[in-house]
Amino acid sequence: MKKIGEDHITLDGESLTIDQLVCMARDVQVQVVCDPPALENVNQSRRYIERIVKNYIEAYEKHDGSDAPVMQVYGVTTGFGEFKNIPIAPQQLEQLQRNILLSHSAGVGVNTDADDPANYFSAEVVRATFVIRLNTLLKGYSGVQPALLDFIVKCLHAGVIPLVPLKGSVGSSGDLCPMAHMFATLLGEGRFYVVNQDANRFPTPVDFRSASQLSQALGVKTLPLPGYKDGLALTNGATVSAAMLGLAVYDAMNMASTADAAAAMTLEAICGRTRAFDPKVHQARGQRGQIDSAANILSLVTGSSLVNRCIEVQDAYSVRCAPTVHGASRDTIAYARMVAEREMNAACDNPLFFPGESPCDAPDDPALRDPSKDWDAYSVGNFHGQPIALAADFLAIALAELANISERRTQMLLDRYHNRNLPANLVPAPGVNSGLMLTQYCAASLVSENKVLTHPASVDSVPTSANTEDHNSMATIAARKLQTVLANTQAVLAIELLVASQAIEWRAGCRVEPSMKAVTADADANGANRGEYGQLADTKSFTVATRHEHRKNFVKQLGVGTRAAYLYVRSLAEPIIEDRSLDEDIRLMRRAIEDGSFVQSMTDALPDELRTITSLQAS
Image (cartoon, rainbow, N blue to C red):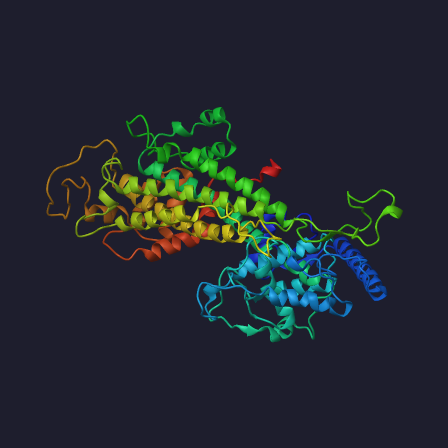
């Protein structure tokens, strides 16, 4: 399997993985190579299309105007959708394919500012869509010109990103609207920009260029014009939805490990019991994700002298049941990964062509086949995005649950009635300082938004094309919602990591025992406020305890994994001594979750890597 950071990846239509997809989508320097045997399949399929068109033209020209039909192939010699029964004159066959790109470019953004990047899919989504569509065409069932594959490769290598509006797809017949916007650039329609390095974000400033400049950006004299079948092949299939699902699955796999780390840090901060993570317990239930999550948390706290110091019999559900909740999300991610990787290697065009094969409804004797009927093309429904829609909806729910339980742990750590003797909001001198109070408000807002966004898009369907397309998947809507839920969950986990780090500083640095009785003295001359808001809310002692030179001592009380996690958090954000703006701390921590560096910091510290998520198909 190709790893992120490799210099080239070969596509063959059969073996594209999530890791490879992300590598090509996010790293513009990666070169894409088409497998020669797969290219030969493309050539063979193209010859098949040309033979079909040749036979059609001959029959059309011989047609005497009687009611006897001329053999028709959907989308090749006929119109599209509602116009599927209208034969196209030979001289208009190529214009038909160009018209689909023009007429289907009908997307909209979130506002009416054509220069606002928020109206368009990100560079990484567009690049992932290019990769998946290229891989699909390499299967050799679509009949496209080989020159179109070369065009996609050149776009990937040059970092060309067509502007593709966010909204307008119903997820079947595939993502028609956004795909049309991508490839209408072949006709000089639309705009594009170029990314040279980081495909995760728009370049600043964004240099939007007219599609008439595309050949110059690619370093070619002319662009290939769509011919027979090409326009339909470039737009059919829920490829944008699949791209978003694939990218989200990769990020979700990383986020599952982040959630385990956050739970482990909270476990340390409350001196919780590790018995709830005993492998025997989780083997007894047998849920794979739960087993892996428990193993991760136990591994992270190995060597800790903080855990198991609480005299209470049980911890709160948000800690004790973390493997159960995280594990269920892990299993959902594994399911979504299976669906995404299947779809990334799927033939999802319509019609499909299988040279040398006969359809199941054809008479065994070729002489008995009605010459006016289409025996070459398979008009089927592989373009329908239902598998992606369901997986995206399910994955969004799973990620929202990681956020839900994380926010509950954050609330527990900040609540002086439930955090086992730590100060309210974990801040010295409370009252004048609010500390980390508002981080929980922010987390609460995000999890509430997630609850709205996780209403499934896949249960809805609005018929299109005069009811000939009477059930649609809404896969693109599901995938776009998933992206928002994923981003929200990253932020919620970032907040828990910041809060847990400050709680650990009180617990380990200031030696606050979970069973200590609260001191009731009023504020003293050292600035301590030891009344009902906690016995150790002392600005001076907390400041001293959390200095850089003291951290190397008290972190020895942490587990080997949580120690690395804590130190990484503190490399980005200092403790809260007095109130300050917290948004930058959250942003930096979220970025570390997003790019994987936080999880990597723990992986490097552990003797054995954290358990990752494998596809259900591979298990």
